Image (tube, rainbow, N blue to C red):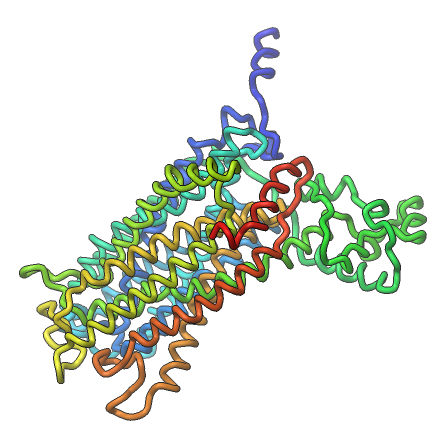
Length: 600
C-alpha cells in the first residue's frame, strides 16, 4: 500500500485538463510531451510528402495530361489548393464540436488515402493514354467526361482529406504540451516551428525525387509513392494512440455565439455604469469549455450580454437563468476574441496570394527558362527545394540567433507573433520584386519567334536565362514563411479560446485558401483587362514571351505593400486574450505590440 501511495504521489497530472485514452486525467510522465510530439511531427512529414507528391506538379499534369493551357491550369491549381484549405473549417468544426481532434485526424487521413489510391488507379487505367505520354515532349490525348469526372473526384477527395486533417494535427500536436508547466510551455512554442519544418522537409522529397519522376512522365510511380507515404502516416498516427493526451470536444459554438448577440440586443437600452462589478460568470461554463477568460475593454455593446439586470438576478435566485437572457463573461470574451482576430486574418490573405505563385506561376516561369545543366534537365517544380532549404535555415536562424538577440536587447521574450507576421509581409514584397526582375530579364533573353514549348524537351525552354536566377525569389518566399506562417500558427492557436483551438489553426489554413481564390480572381481580372489582340494576349498568356508576367509580379508587390500598412494599424489596435492566471504575460505582449511599428 505504501508503494502504491508513493507511485500516486509521483504521478503528477497535467494542469490543462487533458485526459488519456481511457478518459482519466493525463499523467505528465506517461503521456504527451516530445514522445507524442515526435510521432506527430513524423506523421506530418509523411502526410506532407504524400500531398505535395500530387500538388507540386499538378499544374504540369493539367497541361501535359489533361490538355489545359497555362492560365486555365494556374487557375485550377489555385482553386484546388484553395479548396484544400477551405475544408480546414469543416475539420475544425467537427473537431471542436463533436469528434475531438484525434478522431477527426484519423478520419480525414483515411479519406486522404482513399483519394490518393483513386488518383493512382485512374491515372494508370484511363488518363495516361496513349502509353508513354505525359512528359515534356509527348502530351496525352483528350479524355472523356467520365474520365475527367473520376480525376476531379479523386483530387478533391485528396483536398477534403488533407484540408480536414491539417488544422487538427497542428493543434493536436500542441495539445501534447501543458502550458501550466514552464518546460512544456516552452516546448509548445518550439513545436510550431518544428511542425512547419517537418512540413517542409516532407515536401523536400516530393519536390526532388517524386518531381523528377513526374516531370519525366512517370506520374503513376509518383502517385503510388504518395499513397504509400499516406498509408505509413496513418499507421504511425494510430500507433501513438496510448501515448497521446486528449481534450474532450466542447459542443457546437454557434449557439453560444448567438446567445451573446441576442442577450446584448435584449439589453440595448440598459445603461451600464460599473460593468465589471455586475458581469456574470458561471462556474459550469468554465468547467465545460476550458479556462475562464477575463474581461477586456472594447466592444462594450457585447458586455451588456453579461450584465446582470434586476430581472436576471431574480431568475438566478429562482434557478431559472436563461442563457438567451444573460451570458457569461467568458462567452462574451469568446465572441470578442473572434472579432479581434478577423482583421488580422484578413490582412494575411494577400500574403497567401504571393505564396501561391510558387506552385503555379513560378513553375510556369521556370519552364520557360534554360533548365539544363550539361545534359541533365532540372524539373521546374523542383526549384521549390530552395524554398524548403530556406525555411529550414531561417527557422534555425530565428530560434537560435534572432529571437534570443531581440530578447536580450529589449529585455522581453523576443518578437511577438504579430511582429513576425509583419516582417513576413515585408520579405514577401521583396520576393515579388525579385520575381519581377527575373521575368524582366527572362523576356530580354527570350528566343524571338519561339513559342512556349520550343525545345522544351531539351530543357532550353524559350529563354537563354538560367532557371537558377529563380533561386532568390524562392529563398525570400521561404524566409517570409518562417515569419508569417509559423507566426500565424502560434498566434491563432494561442489567441483562440480553449473551446475553439482547432478553429484558430483553421483560420491560418483558410487564409491560404482565400489567398488561392483571390489569386485566381486576380489572374482572371488581369487577363481580362490586359488582353487586347494576338500581339498582346494579356500579361499571362500561354506563350509567356508574348506577355508581361513581370508586371503581374510588380502589381502583387504594390498590393502587398498597401496590405502591410493596413496590417500595422490593425496590429496596434489588437488586444491580446486574457486567460485567468496569465495576466502578467499578456500585459507584456500588449506593451510590445504598442512598439510594433518601431521594431519592424
